[in-house]
Picture 1 (cartoon, rainbow, N blue to C red):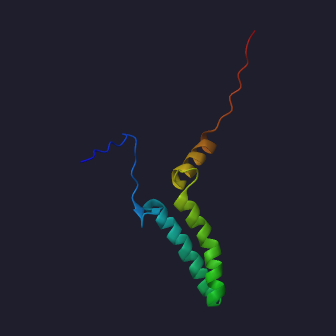
Picture 2: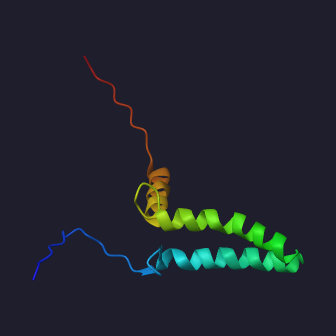
Picture 3: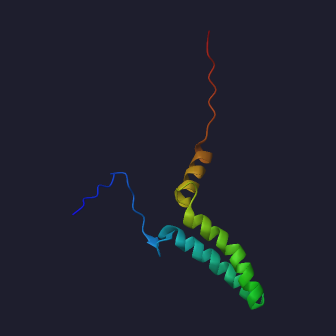
Length: 96
């Protein structure tokens, strides 16, 4: 029997259907629901509505499913937000 050793910093994230993380699934489904509701209320024909829905929903699904640079999108966006919030410029004057 083979023994597999996982690093201690390895984080296993549960994914819906093995593709999209659960913490991303809720905002994505809310976004898709809003797009669907708007298209339904505008009484767009089925084929046009399907095309518009795919064009507006598929890119975020792909981005959230794949991630940015192999990293999940949510921690990536959180790190960008924290950096922008706490970014400071330090100027040092060297005395001679």
